[in-house]
Structure formats: C-alpha cells, structure tokens
Image (cartoon, rainbow, N blue to C red):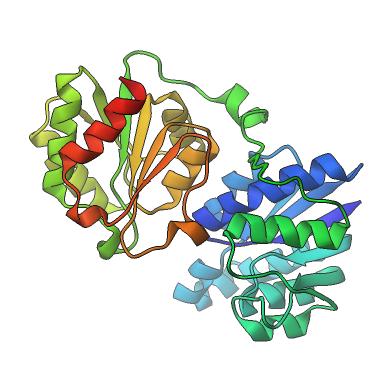
Length: 318
C-alpha cells in the first residue's frame, strides 16, 4: 500500500510526524511512504525505515527567486516527481493551504484535517476525506490520531516511538567518543526564544568544572558569531563546523546531555532519546514541545539562572 505524506516543514513539525509513521508501519502490513518535504529538510524523512522515496520541494527558495526557479525548471521537476506515482492515500498532515494544493495536484485520494481541525481551515476544501482531530492535544498525538483514523487501526496509548533508534540512521552515525561532552543548542529563528549569551557562558563554565567539553552547533552567521564569542570566554567550548543534519544527529547522539532552546534540534535530541533540557518562554510545550523519555522542560527560562539549569542537569547525569 502506497501513501504520499505531505509535511514540508518545519524541522520540529517533521520530527513530530515520525511517531505516526512508526505506528502505521507496525500496524498496517506492506505499507510504504513517499514524503513531500522542503529540500533543506530532505535528510529527515530518509532516517525512517518506513519512507521509500523523498520528494523535495523548494518553496522557500522559489519564493525568494521565482525567475531563477523557473529557469532551473525547479517547479517543473517537482511536479514530475510528485505525479510519477499513483497513491492509495495522499495524506496532508500539515493542514495549510500550501500543503493542501500539493495534495490536490498529487495522484490519489486526498485525506486531511476537517475545517475545524486544520491549521488553515480552508485547506480542508482540497480533501475528499476529512477528519476531526481535537486541537487541544500535542501535535504528535494529533498526527498519530489522523493516521489511525485514515488507516483504521487502534492507537496504542502513550506509546511514542520516533523510529530512529532502530533505523539505519543510528547504525551509520559516526559517534564522537573522544571526550565526554555536552551540546548547547543556542540558536533559533526567533530572538524571543534565545537565552542570554551570558547565561550560556556561565553554563559552559559550570560544565568546565566537571570536565565536560561543550559543543556548539550553528545554522547561520549570527549563530556562528555568538558561538565564537562564547568560545573566547570558555576554555572548554568547541564551535562545530557547518554540518549536515545527519552529522549533527551524530553529535547529539554521542552527547552526555543536550541543553536546547525552542528549536528543531531540541526535538531531534528528544527523538534520539538523549537526556535533554528544553528551555521555553511563551511557547506552550504541552502542544508543540519536545517529547521524549528523558526530556525536562524549563519554563519561563529568561528568568532562570544558569546555576538552576546546571543543578537540573547535575541531578540527572552526574
């Protein structure tokens, strides 16, 4: 049975979709997924054993430079790849107008959220089969419920399996074992979600007292400069090079602990079952927060001292 899954972004949303794939794959025999995803995140679906083919879409790039996109045949190539297969189910798990349009163009019966369940209600007009999924539950469970109703199987209560620990991703990672280390995920798309730089410095210095190296990933020039400033004041800090998502997954998987602001890599750490402290401000983690066996949420983090975060960390790993 072939399913086309449409969930293009963002990184956290993609991670939230993985448990539904795991459960569906375990419940329904001979099930395989193709996945439409933003090209910058195309590595993520490939980590899951249930995904057969990834169909990258570069909407963000096309919007920035539509003439270049047309000259390079980007949209044309995407449409050819999208319509190359006929699917038993075309599932829009995003519930936005942009994802609903992609679903409409794809070949197969369309499934998605109902008008009162979709993030953008008018997206539901593009589906033949629509399902009411309560909004007052975590995004992971919303997608799990959507899949279970579409594919007609019973949900396993409170069983969240991202499908990564048994996947080829883990077996192929180059795990870093030279030193015991922590990862501080300091970068995010919103300044309001960033922790004060001085607190990262204080936390790194506390880690140094316990002989931990601290590794800092980054995704853009601003984050790189912040990481470099932290490094100049902390002898135990290592600024990572520019890395693929798969390579960063390897760094996270090898870490003793991860401290992350509200961003995609925090969700990846949780999915990899790493001890993770997630720092939250105004975002309600009950609906879209990190979920994992070893995740600890710190709320109102702007008013939390580095020493408080370190004491939580110490109580778990030291």
